[in-house]
Length: 361
Image 1 (cartoon, rainbow, N blue to C red):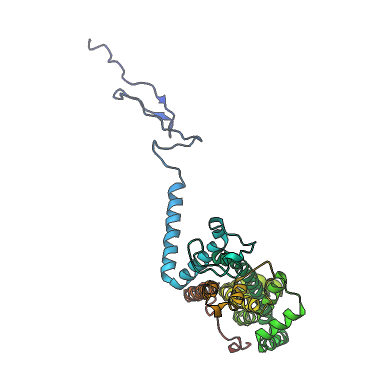
Image 2: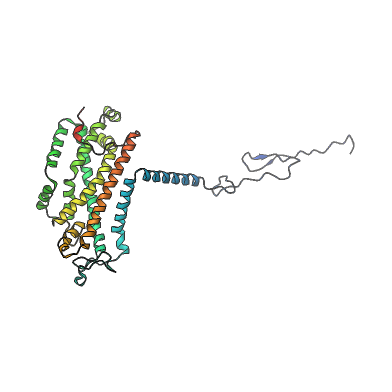
């Protein structure tokens, strides 16, 4: 090569490579072109081993909720134990018949009053029917009627108490004097009066139990409404022209949900006891339906003969369920109290307190 001869130009033209910038310089020292990024199934750029974009966040959220749930269980063991017993009893009554099959429609006099033995772990009753199967069937009726009556009583009492506490004045005085007069009547007397007027049936039982149980809820919610109606957000709703019913349903009732939820648990426990009492008096569910109170009533006629197992099973079931709902209510009350201490706006700090301790402002 002579001096006058020009050196060859090593520069190469620019090449377009499908990438983030779209252009790559392939100079003389470039041995390989830039690798194109991998595209996902929907055309998005993804790494060779990238996981779905929301999978990690979803796993983290599930783990966080699990940790919070376990922490709440450790913080409120009463509520946890009560809820566990209630769920276990509900599973026993409603799912148990799918596993433990018994005949609850026929009478087997040849097997009447058998003690606990193989094939009948809890024995049989006076009709020869298996006690475990009888316990499941009676538990379905008792839990269903008690839950419906308890929720109905809580709703009726909450509405009555919220209206009385929010409006105050003459309306509050008249409505609460009605409650005081009804509370003064013994519950058993009122139950017997209502059941003697109406023919016993499932619907009548629910209405009668709810009609005698909503009074305490009304006093509790009324006390909550007396304090909530002076909050700034309620006053702001009044200034903006909100109606009384709208304020009660949108502001008073939601912020008294702690008191209402706790009271529902106690109402269900109370309804189970009332239903058992009525059934023991012969005013409960009618044949062929049966509940735990009917089982106790039948067992009291044979207990003197030494058939102790017939009264043991329903008695233990009623005790466990009532105790479980009481524990659940106490635990929830503690939880709402702690939330109220932390400043949660919707917490009801005192679930049970005398309504008369709060005076009209």
